[in-house]
Amino acid sequence: METFFIQINNLLTIPPGNLIYHLVLCYALVGAIQSTQIFRENQPAARRAVLALWILLVAQLALFLTSAFVWQGLIPAQSILPPLDRAINVLSLIWLGWLWLSPASSRMDDTAAYILSLLVAIYWLVNANLWNADTSSAAYNSTVFSLGWELTGCFIVLLCGILLVIRRPNLWETGTAMMVILLIGYGLQVFYTDISANYAGWIRLASLAAYPLLLRLPQRFAMPVPAPATAQPAVVESGRPLAERRRYSADPRAATAFLQLASETTPNQLVTAITRAIGQFMLSDLCYLIAPSANSNMVTLQGGYDLIREEALPGLTLDARAVPQISTALQKDKVLRWAEPENYQDELRELSRAIGVNKPGTLLLIPLVHSNEPSLGGILFFAPYSNRKWSGDDQMYASAITEQVIQILRKSNL
Image 1 (tube, one colour):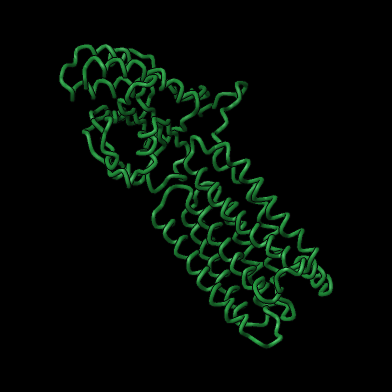
Image 2 (cartoon, one colour; image 1 turned 60 degrees about the vertical axis):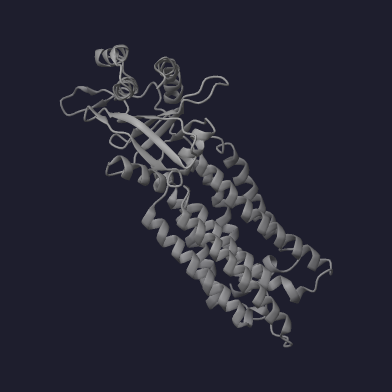
């Protein structure tokens, strides 16, 4: 058995066999990028994921090209590759953790990733200089430098795994499984390292097992699939079928709400009437009218309506830095649809705090824009109570309603 693992270690660390390691990792990263790319347009979390995947891919390509130069004898094998290999391994752990832990914009997570990456680069430069100055013939695995990288890797993987279990972002199980596999690899490298070698065979073997899990990443952004038409209705204890909650309304209250628009004269009354009418039609827990703003640093909610409590909501102003994706969508006249609140916890938490609800919900933002005319703001649908999963059909239905809202706002000069 020991001979078998030695052979696997040699296969993954000695040219040309180590080509398998580089190809598998690059293939997994390219596949994850291609399958995640299609969600970039409407999901900011997908754009962040693609950024992390590109960083990982560029790092692996740099390591692969350096290995190719070493194999061809263009670069001395001992001088640069062993420290660079360890540095890229640890750098990859940082961005893997960022990828799984921070699907939504988080200043704290972003800053931590940048600072840790900078520290890795500094440590690598110091390590490379000291390693080249060492005149002994010892292999890199037998040095304290190697042990330092491995212990750092263990700490990062363990920390990321714990945070994933605590935060539980969407698809956290896959991210945790990846961290467990990598932790096993780093642990084996610490306790059962081959001190006659220069590269971390156990870590490479764990990476081969872990990186293909990135191909599951697009499932984080896939929208919920509607139940098939043949599905049987649920039945309660009384034997009566339990009807599905309606997604749109055409009852007398909704019609009355729209008819009341014609009688409202003051701006505040008109804002309440508009949001009440749209909220009734869309059956949205909360509905807000967002004002157009020349100040890109602020997002102004003119007013809204709470369909659950049946009461008007006052206007409020948000710092655009606290809700960057909402602000960007308004500036670019883009639809924003967040069906999975765990992917956007920081921004939704800030929005919930400002509105005064206890928990974040799902969100749909429809810009009020027609052709090439200036934007009139937007309509914000927020579901903190029902946690409604906004779909593509919801988006189309809401967009059709906003055409009427645009005409009303133009006539009223609101």
